[in-house]
Image 1 (cartoon, rainbow, N blue to C red):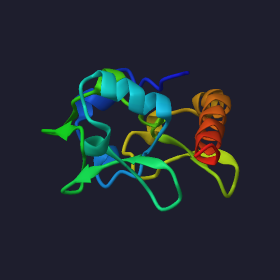
Image 2 (image 1 turned 30 degrees about the vertical axis):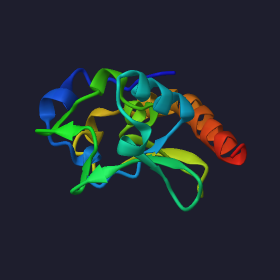
Image 3 (image 1 turned 90 degrees about the horizontal axis):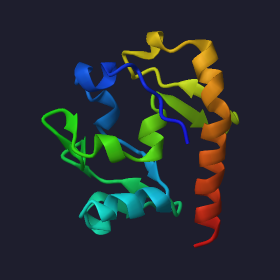
Length: 132
């Protein structure tokens, strides 16, 4: 699947707003990939009340955030690769997360080009939940 690239700006910007109090859902593929890096599933994620796996926060920060940098950036979860493009289940559409200070760098064309892949990802999360 696609990965949104802000030309390295996100990595250099180091605001890490997207990594504070994250509610990022994880696919089974995300979990497997992270476990292969040597991390234990119970340390970096949890099953929420709705039956979705989500990244764990430690003192408000994502488990993988250290010194405002993602320790697994190259292998970060798919949802993180889409951010700040998010999917609203209620409205059944993609949008930009207003919390991100770089959303002004993302064109409507870029937003639309990610819509199909993001919807596909969300559908896979819903299927995985249904299979539990």
